[in-house]
Image 1 (cartoon, rainbow, N blue to C red):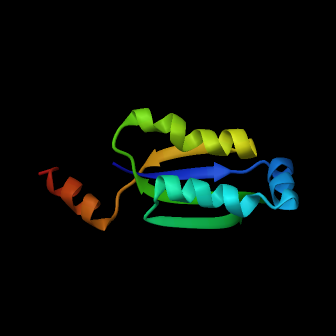
Image 2: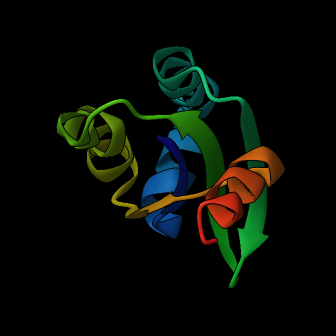
Image 3: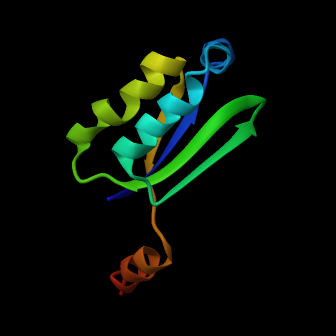
Length: 96
């Protein structure tokens, strides 16, 4: 199932990661593990935020997906099922 992970990073923890020079390495490790089809980074609500779109085959993947953000950045993490246009069309066709 395609999901969107939104991780809102704690400002102080992410400041520490930037000051120590570890931020690029930590983000690269996360991206290498998840292999998202798309990854976006933006300030949202005044906080550093990551939006990652990837396939999650089983709900048991939730701990390894979210923990790096929680342990490294004290982030608020949300995982939401999402659809692309093809998924939406397929789902709508089943409504008849």
